[in-house]
Length: 418
Image (tube, rainbow, N blue to C red):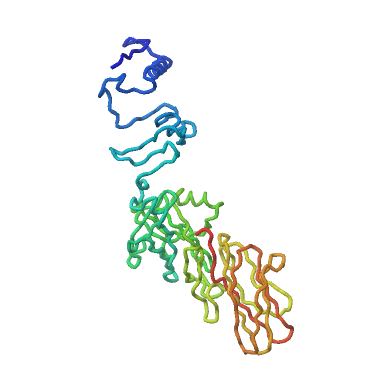
C-alpha cells in the first residue's frame, strides 16, 4: 500500500475545531485523487453495504464527469451527460446487468421491466403502457353501480392511480366493499378518521337528491381495516375540473384518486329518484338506455313545450350545473333527441335550429311535419357541443293548423375527462 499521511497531526486530547476537520478532509481527498481504493487503503479495510452522505454536495456516478449520472444537491435532480466518446455506465444486481446509460446515445436503457414500489407488482410499467384500459362504470340497477372487470382475472378491476397501479378482486354478486357502489351506503376508508372495513358509497356529507348529476371516483383505501393496495368507489358532488383538484387531493389524498365518470339520478320530470340506466364506452361517450315514461325517448327530459308561434323560441338553453336541467361543465358534447307530437290532423310542422346565446343560428336542423297523420310523432337526433348559453330553438311552419308538442331529451354525453 502506498504511503498516506496527513500534513498535520493532532494529539489524542487536543481540541479540534470545524476548520481543522475541513482541512483534514480536503487534504485527504486531494491525496486520494477523490477516491479511496487499493492503492492507498489496505485490502479489506472496509466493506460498505450502504453509503450515506450527510454533507450537502453534488454526487457524480459514472466513468467521467462527461459520462455520468449527477445528483445535483441544489435542485435534487438526476441529470445525464456525455461527450459521445466515452463508455457506458452500467448498473448491475449481482452479476446481471439491469440497466445502463449508453455513452453514445445518452439514453437510459432498461434491460428488464419497471415495477412500482408498494403497489400490485404483477402489473408492470410496460404492461400498463401496452394493454391497460381504464375501467368503465356499469349500471346494475337504480341504486347500484359496478366497475368493469378489465383484466384477465375474473372479478378483478385494475386502476392506475398517479401514485401507481392497484388491482382488487371481488365478486360483486356477493359483496360490495370495493367494485360495487350502493347509493344507500356511506364510503369508508379514505379519511383519516375512518375505521373498520372499507366500503364504497356516498362521500361523507353527501345526500341523495332528485334529478342530480353525481361524479364517481376510484379512491385508494388509506385508512381502516383494508388500508393498502385496495380501492373503493365514491359518489361525490364535486366535479373533477382543474379548479377542484386541490380540494380532491385534500379529501382523497394527492395521487390517490381517479375520476371514472358521471351518473344521473332522475329522468327529469318523471321517475326522479333512481339512477338512469346507461352504457359507457371507452371513447368517453355515455349513452342513456332507459326512459321515464312509455312516450319518451331514452334519456333525461329537459323540455316539453307546445310550439304555437312562427317565431323561434328556445326549447332548451344549456346552463352549467349539477341539478335539474343543468349540464356539468366537464361534458364536451351532448346527444339530443327531439320528439314532436302533433295533436290533430292538419298539415302543419315545425322548424328547429341550434342557436347561440344571442340567437344566431349555429346548425339548421330538419323540419318536422305530421303528414296528415292524427297524433303522429316524428323526431331526430343531433350531437352538439356543450356550450353554455347555446340553445335549441323551434317555431311553427304555419299559423294555421294544430299546435305541436315537442319533447327534448339529453340521451348521451361526451365526457372528455374519462
